[in-house]
Length: 111
Image (cartoon, rainbow, N blue to C red; front, top):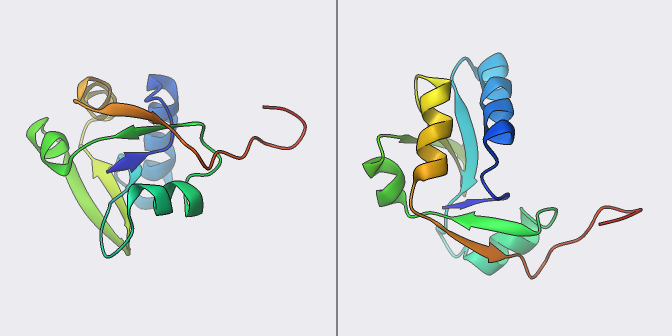
């Protein structure tokens, strides 16, 4: 499971709020390595605007007490928890690794 940032708590909370406003649940977007979509492909096609990628396993997210909801837009999923503060805290503490995105494309006008 890949997330395009360094797990900044403020960004995660804002994302969760946006999800709640639109969909009625607290969720944070991630992408899964499924059906031929591997880290390199996802980094290039879905997450090129992020310099760093947080890489989780589905088992670690589930083991932390979070849910993974299939959005029907493979390879996109939402990491979900009923409580926003818990969602953010659990994602920040969840085992992961950070990798530099080899496909990072800085925004025009600066890095």
